Amino acid sequence: MNLDPRRAAVLALHWQVNVIEPEGFFGPMLSGPVARSGVVDRAVRFHEAAGVPVFFTRFTIPEGEGGLVRNTGFMRAVGDAQEAFRPDAPGARLIPRMAGGTPTVVDNQKLSGLAGGDLASRLSGQGVDTLFLTGVATNLTVEQTARHGTDLGFTVHVVSDCVTAADDAAHTASLANLELTTAGCLTAEEALARLRARS
Image 1 (cartoon, one colour):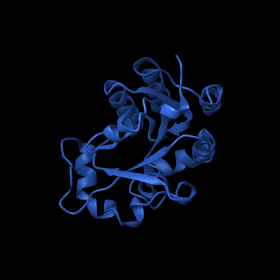
Image 2 (cartoon, helix red, strand yellow):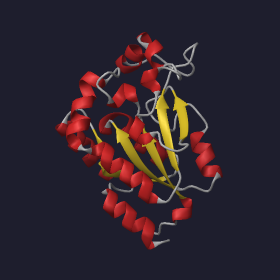
Image 3 (cartoon, rainbow, N blue to C red):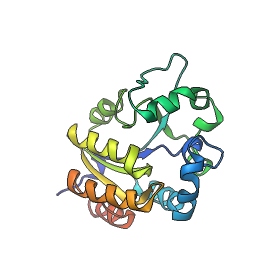
Image 4 (cartoon, rainbow, N blue to C red):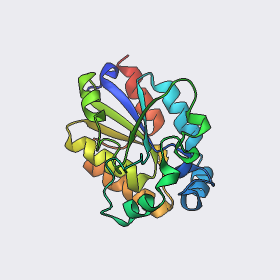
């Protein structure tokens, strides 16, 4: 499949304190696996080397709850702790390794980074048709966003060594699902080779 890097973007999903750091809301579940995996360093290098726009998504809950719908245990849990997810709360910030420069940040209250806002239409309006996904967790926001993006007509690749989950088995199973339900998973090296081949 031909890839035009002028029509590609990276979606960097949930690289925020509440998800990644020990003091964050999901820290007890995710900070250890994230640290052990080395995924942050790999994702930072990929974002810097990709040469295409990078859009960071954050899960936040504004006053009034925005588009939050408490229809799952996950959404009820974050809704009950919504002060920790306010857009200006410490836990909502991008982790320092991801916050350099002036990152493009998109907030929403959905598991899919493409739901509940105008990001998909913004991407399409900029001519983007191919998405490379990084983030945490593989079996949660990454898989949800990848499937959603595919249904919206984007060509989606999960960057397999730039995502991780709380559990190795869940991570592996999710990547196997995504291999079938998207345009296929790629390592960062493979994704960069495709981007550079068409530069």
